Each structure stands twice: as structure tokens, then as C-alpha cells.
Image (cartoon, rainbow, N blue to C red; front, side):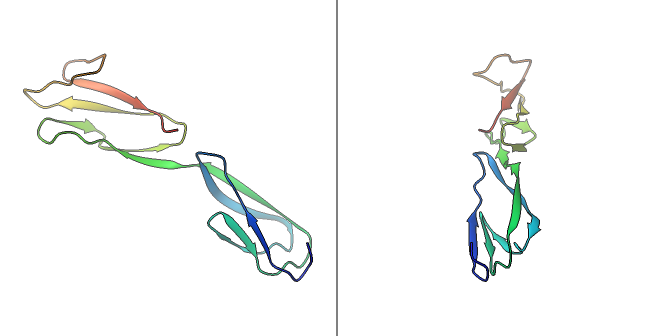
Length: 114
């Protein structure tokens, strides 16, 4: 790449991950990150950059029928590939149905975002 020119790099994380940081390891790569692009306004010398990635985090909200029960917790934050659990609790006069195993009026669910 010629010096005194601009450079644009697209950084593409694997599925389920996002860019965490972009570190300049050496040289004249001072630039800015805009989304998945790293832009060097003026290249002044050879350089190296190193992106790091982190798992995406998802907010999962569990909705029930009002007055018939609840879930605990109502909203979960789960990172890509990890699992989380929530419990469905039936209100008096109702029962949790459609799932095994059920203990009394509660049922524990596990989820894994992919």
C-alpha cells in the first residue's frame, strides 16, 4: 500500500461475535473504527492492527398471560452459545402445561441462543 493514501479495512467477525477492540500493534495505522470498517485517513508507514472479538449478547424477554402466572426472571441477558434458565410459575387456579418435568406449579426452561 502506498504512503499518504487512505486505507479501508473491513473486519468480519464469525457468526455470533462482534468487534470488541482494534489495537494498533505497530506502525502508522492510526485510524478510526466505524462499525465493521477500520479507516486509516493517511498511511504513513507499514503497520499491523489486531481486532479482538466478543460474543454477542441477547436480551430475551419471556412473556406470559397476565394474571395466569409469571416467569422468573422476566428478562435474561444471554451471550451467544451460552445457556440460561428461567422458571414458569402458575398463578393460583392455573397450572403449567405442555412440558416435562413439571414440579408443582413450576417448570424450569433452558435456552441457548445460536
